[in-house]
Image (cartoon, rainbow, N blue to C red):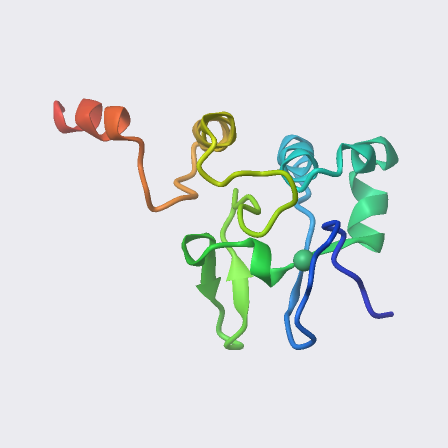
Length: 124
Ligand SMILES: [Zn+2]
């Protein structure tokens, strides 16, 4: 069954791959909120994972790695951050949300560690 990208107003190119929602419930909610589809959280992770996808154009290069099948895949903890309705990519609220989340996951999901954080690490 072909999936559609669930980002409203998305102009998905035909050959773009689609990514499943994350299994982790907290991350799933962050995705819903960043893509402007908070309504999806009510349906639950399992249902959404079966029925919805987010296409590749909403993820920047830092969020992806190329798997052995030569397909772009998402790193653990990646969050859609491009071409989203009503989201200014530089808005402090948005960056804060991503930053808090990457802390929470204890995974380095972005290759841009927070300046304060790296300064702290250098002391050790
Ligand atoms: Zn899309």
